Amino acid sequence: AQAGQVRNIRKKMFEIMTEEASKCDLKELVQKFISSPDSIAQEIEKRCESIFPLQNIFVRKVKVLKKPKFDLTKLMEMHGDSAAEDTGAALDKIAAATTVKALKGAGGRL
Image 1: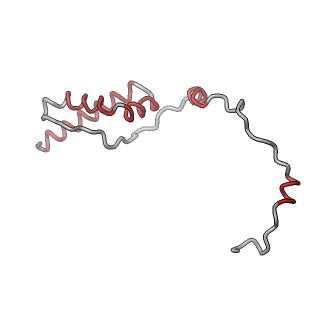
Image 2 (image 1 turned 180 degrees about the horizontal axis):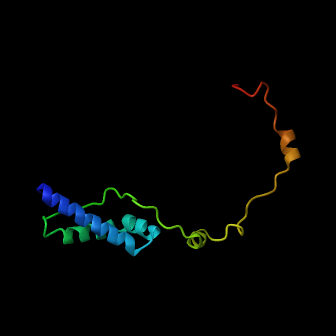
């Protein structure tokens, strides 16, 4: 392909990726890249056919250009209530201090 065709193909690919990213949130986008990478590749192949015939298209690298908007409620929905989970038993500090032997030295290298 000539340099002008390569520029047009890259521009079209950038548009397709931006369009796909704007349709869904970050978690869904990552899932789309992992589970069905062929769908985006087929879209690129179909739209760039008029510029140059492409085949064997793979998405190799994806770069985040802008930080996504942070939504605290969605984060809490994803992680659920962490307070309801078992956090472990309480630690008896006196018993722990007596069972652990103190190391000799000044605290530097052993």
